[in-house]
Image (cartoon, rainbow, N blue to C red; front, top):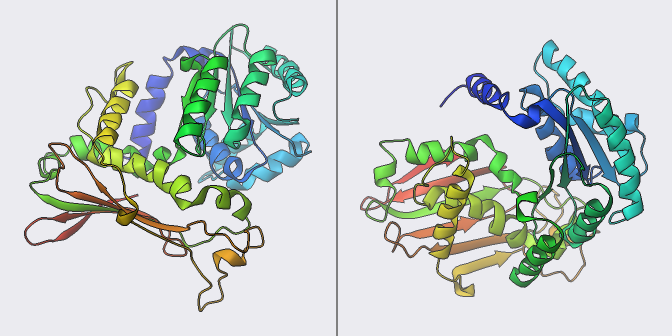
Amino acid sequence: RMKRTESSSSIAEQCTTETFMRQRLSITVLGASGDLAKKKTYPSLFELFKHNLLPRHVVVCGFARSKMTDDQFRDRIAPGLKIASFTEERLKAAFLERCFYRPGKYGSVESFAELDRDLSAWEEQQDADEATNRLFYFAIPPNVFLDNARAIKASSFSKRGWTRVIVEKPFGHDLESAQQLVGEMNSVLDEEEIYRIDHYLGKEMVQNMLVLRFGNAFLEPLMNRHHVDSVVITFKENFGTDGRGGYFDHYGIVRDIMQNHLMQVLSLLAMEAPVTVSGSGMSGNHIRDSKVALLKAIAEVRLDDMVLGQYVKDDQGNPGYLDDPTVPSDSTTATYATAILKIQNQRWDLSLIHISEPTRLLSISYAVFCLKKKKKKIKIYKI
């Protein structure tokens, strides 16, 4: 595996040739006062900034309903921006200077019109080409995706460049609502303006899976039903809902973790080699096509192939799920799930994929391959 500094350097060199690096750029984070933005979104943006993968003139504006000043917001996100040297400390200060905050009402054309005026003023001050690009990151529940997309389209779209919207999971509540949301979003935005992402793919080990799968002369020939009896993918956390019960109880562990994060890991572990994985303008589509082909080969999961449960109070005094005051006392929402998936294609037919996601255990994710004959277990990936 390449060292992080070498990898970051080569990517940064490639990034300098990208047109957007020379153009004006504004990033607006909707839901900026929330947990996801503080723990994931802003630290990720800082990493991009730190490794020269964002232009130094970028403006990052947080948007949410909470009332805060720019300085109060910077104090809120600053602890999550990790540094390792004096140089990085200066970069952190420079990044925070590019961060602003504006309170407003979700889905309000008026609120986004006010945001547009501020964005325009900041963009005029950027030392860059006049082409102006805007990126809106939705760290908000899916039930307000559409209203915000409409408001952005009506009053905050860039008039001199591209506008893109990034939506995070969960994307709907079930298949019907997800398909409905796809149709409604496509009625407001063009497909190339919508990016659906899973932040779990940002983990370094997950990103390295393509290399370990298809660039490993030892491993790839063994990744099939002739040598593998089963694959176990496990996700564990050492904490409970901790006040997030109102959100979590609406979705449960299957929707919150299994059908997005772990299915992405499964796809990368089990899919066929894409036509290209990098160096091509179509590599993203090629990887997607390989994932989709794998997912279509999975047999329908029956309830008999699953185990569901809830965590309870332990002997160390950690509260159970129903002890969380934000969780309904009669809730039957699962916090634990194990499923057996059967992939029906030439590579994996007759092999089993076990996916489990308990809570209140060690905070680790890993995949174990059970080889045939001796049934020897080999832990290959630690995520």
